Length: 428
Image (cartoon, rainbow, N blue to C red; front, top):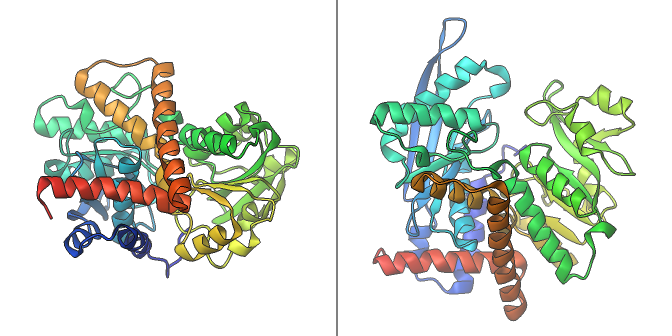
């Protein structure tokens, strides 16, 4: 979890400033791209199950839409802040740019904890969020999607409320919906699979077979679960998984040296990715502290939980055996830790490249909804593989050609594309 002192937006701006210097951007372009174009803070009154009212605070931030409609998830989190949403919206802009899809960056959130809310209460939050922001989102304007602790059901409630307000059918106004209600096949797997598509390409360039590697994963939500599944299919072995224990309000790590059994763990996992500790122990897993995932003797680290997880305080605990870090989460590595990782020569697959599979498949869902024609799962995942591989090769080629760190190369490509769109439109 992010600490109080950590400010994700300041981190995102620091990353942008570094890239702006590399590109020698003019001051007006820097001023435009360093801040969101628009941001909304809303209040959502909800009658709770006990009859009382509670007012939830929500956000929607639209960082930049020069390349197309905004795109970005809505997360439910008790520690949500406007600055976190600002940062995530900026990262979404760069993410869409690096995989070259015609969308801009947005993000939304509500300060709440779904663990402590009934389904009826969650539905009222979803519908209330849309009622407050309906005029600012839509298929040609800004397209939301699921994020941390939101899912297909939440998206469907939001779509239904939007269509009730507009009195029209707009399945493309939101993505991550249930299959059969405008959702795309392959969307559930997309982010996790996208991470491993880039891992596969990186290992190929490093002349390492996936079957000869081990990994440690932070997080056990949707992204981590599907990343583990595809990594296992390639022959790789995950030996440790970190997760949040909601009951005890503490992060833990489960470890099994011979490799975790994904289906076995899924059988003792709640819908938020929390693993039942006692049952894991009974299945032969060691139970370690939440930070233990980072110090495992493995080849690959996959942070796939929250921002601010690899920091100046714990980066020194990374094993000398680690060759690759694939960022399944948004902003998991702070700039201070990044410097240490770069000095150690660890190959990094940055978040805006590695986890762009989710927004890419959301784009596919949006396209399918807007034309009312849906593709088979193999076609969706095939297109995703092509898009992610192409993006990886572009970043890798620039990194080699200009001797850039992979994160810097990804930012240079993305910021260049967005800045050019702003210039072409005459904004700056």
